[in-house]
Amino acid sequence: MYRARRPFAGTDGNGERRLNLWLSTHADLALERLVHHLGVTKREFIERLLTAEDNRILSTLILDSPEWNNYFQIAPVTQ
Image 1 (cartoon, rainbow, N blue to C red):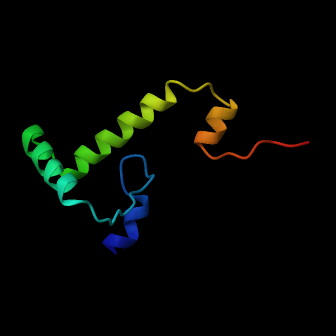
Image 2 (image 1 turned 60 degrees about the horizontal axis):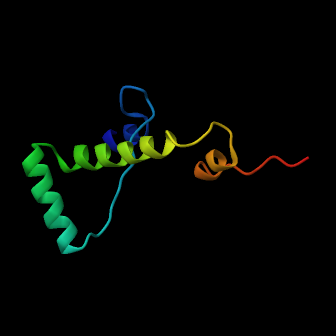
């Protein structure tokens, strides 16, 4: 039941996604140092890192521009 609810979890009901990957030893050790230094979980650190970079890119894009559509992988409208 718990896993079945994960796609709809969270305060906004937008759910959560599972991430399963291998990291280089160097990157994993860096992650361990960073989360220890900042006093956060790996999940929290990675979420912060990803959303900060996404926000940085979004702040450079004009809504509905070709660059915006490319970033969101929206196909151009053809008539």
